[in-house]
Length: 135
Image (tube, rainbow, N blue to C red; front, side, top):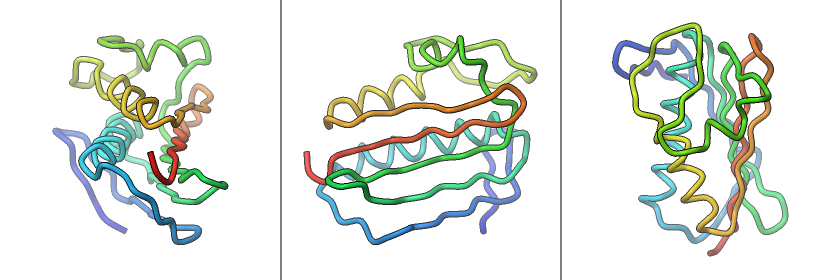
């Protein structure tokens, strides 16, 4: 467990679980951007609640999930959050210009992978990234 702080936002607990050893060939700088942007997003919107990161493999894909237990996202905003300079109304004021998730989506799709979100307002969000083991 680690504590992390982004600007004035923080979380007391980040749990990482590797469900199995995943070996792949990726651009490490881009992989870092994916994980960093998702984690930063979870910290900003997680209302200081625990964050979970899991790594797994599904066939020829690595699967990364970042789960927060914050305010969640209304379904009508799922597509909007991945657009450049788009932000959705929320209960707290956070910094940023609306590029983090856009960048994640661009990188993931460039590898031949995908990203999706599951969320309910008030119950947190789960972002799932699937990237090929080699691209």
